[in-house]
Image 1 (cartoon, helix red, strand yellow):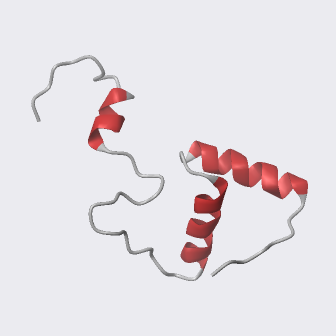
Image 2 (cartoon, rainbow, N blue to C red):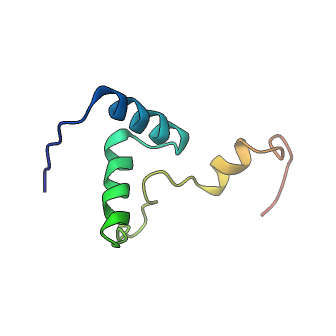
Amino acid sequence: MIITLDIRPEVKDELARQAAQHGMTVDNYATSLLEEAAHVQAKPQAGRRPAGRKSLAQLFAESPFRGLDLNI
């Protein structure tokens, strides 16, 4: 479904800021907010990580453990 919203520029800017904070696109972030408001959780496709979620490799690459040789 496609929904078109007319929002004020300051709302758009705040959505963009929050989306970036969560590592998501504005579209994906807005969708997640709507799903949360509707009390529905997105069903991730098999083998795919939900939008905004990072893999363990990505998390460790950004963490204080970066550069350590860990066998997990």
